[in-house]
Amino acid sequence: MVTETQVANSAGEPRVQATKWRTWKRFWRYPLSSIGVIGMVLLFAFCFVGPMLYHVSPTQGDFTALLQPPSAKHPLGTDDAGHDVLARMMVGGQASLEVGFLSAFVAMAFGTLYGMVSALAGGWVDIILMRIVDILLSIPSIFILLFLNATFKPNVGLMIFVLAATSWLGVSRIVRGEVLKIKNETYVEAALLAGVRTWRLMTKYLVPNFIGTVLVTTTFAVADSILSIAGLSFLGLGLPPPAPNWGADLSAAMNYIFQNAWWLIYPPGILILCSQLFVNFIGDGLRHALETRTD
Amino acid sequence: MSEYVLEVQDLKKYFPIKSGLLKRTVGYVRAVDGVSFQVKPGETLGIVGESGCGKSTTGRMIMRLTTPTSGKIILDGKDITHAKGEELRASRRKSQMVFQDPYASLNPRMSVGESIAEPLIVNKVLPKSEAFERAGELLKTVGLRASDINRYPHEFSGGQRQRIGIARALALNPKLIVADEAVSALDVSIQSQILNLLMDLKHQFNLSYLFISHNLAVVRHISDRVGVMYLGHLVEIGPKHSLYQDPLHPYTQALLSAAPEPRRTKRRERIILQGDVPSPANPPSGCPFHTRCPRVMDVCRQTMPKPVQVHPDHWVACHLHG
Image (spheres, rainbow over the protein chains, first blue to last red):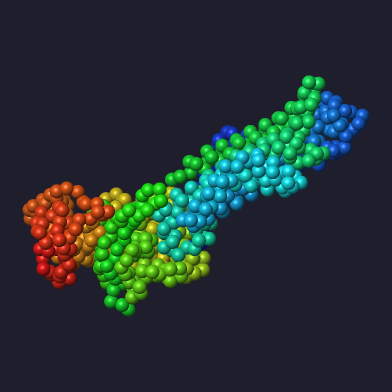
C-alpha cells in the first residue's frame, strides 16, 4: 500500500501543476498582461537598478548647467537648480513604487482580515464593524490625507500608512461580501462537520476561494496609490523636498511651462502614466485569468 | 452499547419570520413540529416527503448544522442537543453527512485527497502522511483510484464527486451517515450505482443510515424502515414492506398511488389530492393533513392524532386508526 501511494503521488504530480498552470497560461495569453509585467519590470529596473549604473546625484545641482535641455552630459537635461533630471526620475520613482505597492499590500492584508472577521462574527459585531467602515468612507480621503500629513512629518512610512488607511475600506467590504457568500456553501458545512476550527476554515476554505477577487482589487489599488502620492506631492503635501519625487517634479516643472522646458514635464508625466498603465494591465490580466476559473 | 444509534424525541424547529424596520418577529415557520423516531445499529431509515415538509431540516438538526428549537437528539446514547465546542466536535465523529449537490460539497481549491484526509487531520486521528494514505484507500473503497488523491474536484463527474463525498464521510468511521437527497442530483443510471455502493458500505463498515429523499422508489430500494413526513410532522413510520404494501395514513396512500410502478401487479386507484400544502407559517389546527384528506372527519379538525401501533413496529398518526 505504501509503495502504491508513493507511486500514485509521483504520477499525480504533473496533473496538479497542470491545474495551477492553466490560470498562469490564461494570464500570459492575455496580451495586455505580458505588456504590463514586462513594463513593470523595466520600471522597477529603471528606479532601483538605474542609480547603481548612473552615478549622478539627484540632489546636488550642477550650477554651471541650469535649465539645460538634454545633452551628452545630462541625457534628460537639468532643472532650475541644475539637478540632473534622469537621476531624479530614477530615484524619485523609488518612493512612488514603494509607497504604491506597500500601501496596497498593507490595505489588502488588513482589509481582508477585517472583512473576514466581520462576516464570520455576524450579528452586532458585523453591524458595528461595517458602520465604522461606512463612517470612514463618508469622510473624503483627501481630507484624511491632508490632516495626517499636516500633523505628522511626511516620510515614506507615513505615506504608506496614510494611503493604506484610506484604501483598506473597499477591500474589507469586498471580502465581507465574498465570505458571506462562501460561508453558506456546502463545502464549508462539510468542513464544520469534519471538525475544522475557525483559523483553518479561514486559511484553507475562505481565503483561497476569494483571494482572486482581492488580488485584482489590490492591483488597482497600487495604481491608485501611485497616483495619490504623485497628486499629493504635486500639491506640495507629499514627501518633502529636496528628495526627488515624480509628482513634485511635475509640479516644479509647471513654472517653466512657458519657457518650453519640455524635458522637465514629459519625463515625470510619462513615468506616472506608464506606471498607471502597466499596473492596470496586470490587474486586467489577473481578472481575466482568475474570474473564469470556475468549474 | 445503547439500543439505538440515534434517537430523536419531539424535535422542533421554528424559524422566526422577521419583518419591519426593527426586525420584529411576527410569526414562525414551523419547519419541523414534533418529530420522534429511532435508528437501530445497522439499520437504514428512509424519510420521504414532498419539498418543504421538513425532512432536510430534520437531517440538518441531527448533524447540528441547524439548532433545534426544542426536543432531544440522542446520538449513540449521548444527548447532543446542546453540545458545543469540543463536545460537538466529538459527536460529529460519530455521525457524518453526504450532501445533495456533489458540485458544491467539495472545496474547489483543495485536492480530493486533502478533502478526504481533512477530518482525519483536524481531529488528529492520523498524522498527515498516513491520513493521505488512508484517503487513497478510501477512494479505492468507493470505486475510484488511489492515484486520484492529487486531482481536483472539477476533474471529476457528478457521480464520481458523490463517491468522493462518501469517502470523506467514511473517513472518521462514523456510526451514522445522514444522506440528504444524496442521489437526487445524479443521473438515473448513476443513482443506482451510488445506492448499491451505499448498501455495500453499510455491511462493510457496519453503518446506519438516515436516508432522506423525495424519491419513493429510491427509499424503498435502500431502506429497512420508512418514515413519511408531511408539513413538519412524521405521519407514518414502519418497516418498508408493511408500509409500501399496506399504507395506513391517507397521505401515504395518496403519495404511493401517485408514484409510477414499473411492474404493476394490482391496479391501484389514483388518489388525487385537492389544493396545496398549507403554509407551515400558518398550519391548520388538529391534524395537519385535514385540509386535503379525502377521509376527513370532525375530530381531525379539532385534535392532533397521536401515533398508534397498528402492525408490529408500524406506527401511524391518524384518527382512522386507534
